[in-house]
Length: 140
Ligand SMILES: Cc1cc2nc3c(=O)[nH]c(=O)nc-3n(C[C@H](O)[C@H](O)[C@H](O)COP(=O)(O)O)c2cc1C
Image 1 (cartoon, rainbow, N blue to C red):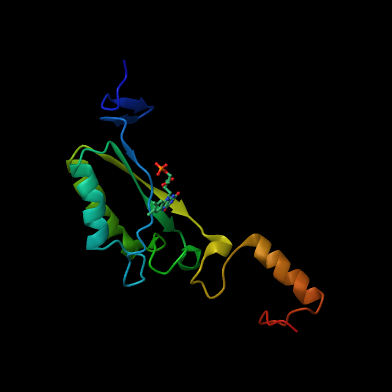
Image 2 (cartoon, helix red, strand yellow):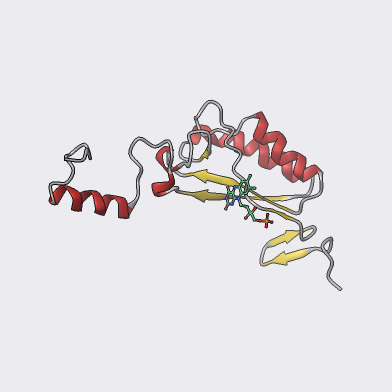
């Protein structure tokens, strides 16, 4: 019988057990630069030490305006790579696999000055055509 601690294989991915950590936003990037800090390092590596087979890192914005908040993780600049590499290398030392949830928050980007979302853009164009908003999206 397969138990939670039995190995799992999916194509080239071999997990030591069936314990998977779901992505959970930490909203903890104090510097707002998208770069994982010591909080993230401890948060993920401690789960690997605890025996998790697969860790999925939290929702990570692929552009600054694609984050839910400015405290979200980001992955849009090479300068962000070393901090991720540090986490991945350490997690691997404990036999865990690690992935990441890349995402774009669209209209749910709470801190973005101008959220980027296809439908929002269409609505904005429509409202402008109807002379309901000006070019700064202020209601007329
Ligand atoms: C603190 C917290 C942060 C979360 N952040 C994310 C996230 O970044 N991405 C995501 O898809 N789901 C997120 N979720 C949802 C979880 O990944 C998960 O789907 C949800 O907790 C349901 O799983 P459960 O029934 O095992 O708790 C978050 C949940 C919690 C509690």
